[in-house]
Image 1: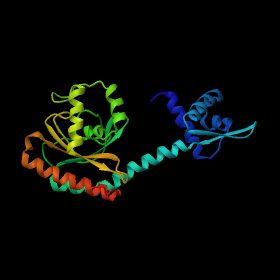
Image 2: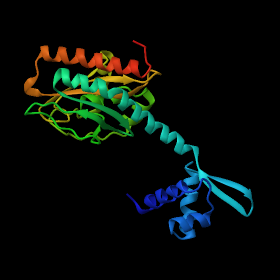
Image 3: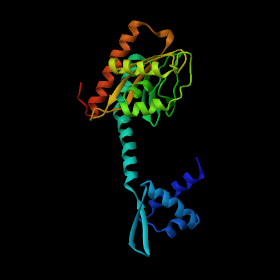
Image 4: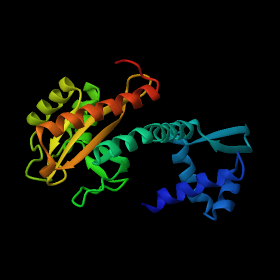
Length: 253
């Protein structure tokens, strides 16, 4: 992380002691020169993270901006999704004894925010916090397919696809076709596109407005795959996803 970002975070931390601070107080608390503080505060103000409070021409203070509340609410919402989803993820894992995970969209990447491993001797292991490109794997592709068309077109116009495995989709036309297939089916499927020798299935998780906020996925070793197993996994994963939707207040289906 750049030193400027770290210094800016240090300034924001100063407001834990007092709701409004002057430049001199910020300089004293952060132990940074006033010129540095002024430069950072100006940037934070421009970004909406700080707000200037001008009482008089000689009495100018700063307080935290509402942008931080917006960011905090988003974090809280993600924590709520995890809290609501976890019992259903646990139940699905117990029923299938397969890796079950929840993935969310962050920027142009998919991030694994929850998972429960299988107890099989040969299994995929994914760490919470792992990031993935949106064009590889069932859960990332599902999140990509859930984008609105303008956001999707912007993403695709700047996309540089890199092969991860031999099965990774490697051109925009095939990716567009796959996105349409996911939208038509209502779920996503992948065969060793991101993780070698692994097959994945994912369903969307909607919030109370009907917006896709996460993907619920199940990953299995490719050697355990059969059409009969696929039917069972899709049925139980869809049921778990629907239960999470309902707990989040969505009743559209």
